[in-house]
Image 1 (tube, one colour):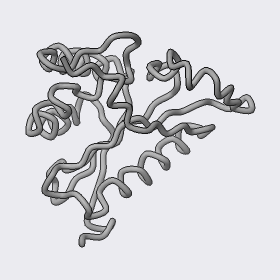
Image 2 (cartoon, one colour; image 1 turned 180 degrees about the horizontal axis):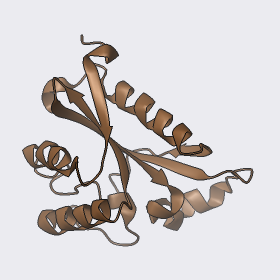
Image 3 (cartoon, rainbow, N blue to C red; image 1 turned 30 degrees about the vertical axis):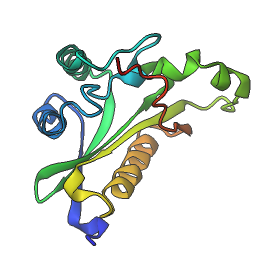
Image 4 (cartoon, one colour; image 1 turned 90 degrees about the vertical axis):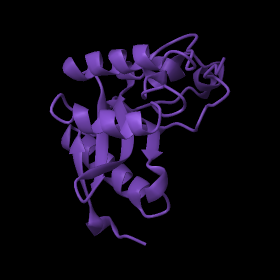
Length: 161
């Protein structure tokens, strides 16, 4: 098992887009074409057949710096991903009746969300996700910190028609 010392990371940016693109393209956009766009949207979200559109939308958000994430590397090869961002950047949860019923308070602090993890199939169970999570938490702290929500995988919401 590799240790966290075996990994490095970079924030998603226009400069690191090719690394993100390589990781996701290797896995058909992840989840059959999501490109980590699910939590950026509200309402109906189709994955099947929408991969090119989702990729284009993600790239546009990257160019505008309206999406956040950590790319994890092993020997300069992208092997993992953690998406995070401020609440307004990832609005999908707000429409959930379950979420609305929780009445979560943030004590006046900025609210962040950690919504997606992905690890290359050849690098799973080697500490990649943990390294990515710790890096995302450090990045949030560097950006002022606040309250952090972590979502569970909501595979019933994403329509896979």
